[in-house]
Image 1 (cartoon, one colour):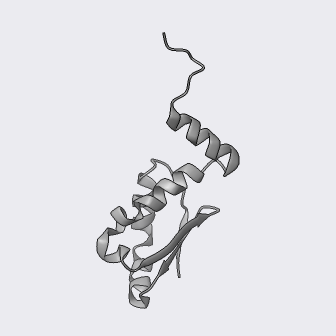
Image 2 (cartoon, rainbow, N blue to C red):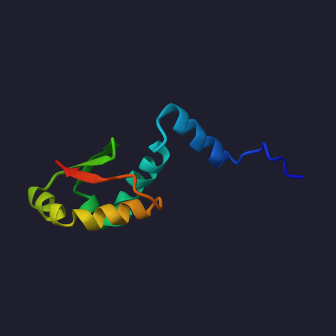
Length: 96
């Protein structure tokens, strides 16, 4: 006896975030949590302060040389990060 008005907990959480934080907030958080798996442990150890604003992911790195190197891989990183949620949420990455 499935009631069509019943939602899963996951659906309720997504609806809450969409209403209070914006429609992409839930997917943005999934992408931020997936950063370490996309870049691997070596790069992750030099990463600080990840956040997404208006479709742009801001990444603070503690290594200047790594910042330059990742700039060349931006398109691959964008593709892999967006694959986490199955749609384009992040359109650009800014390394600081």
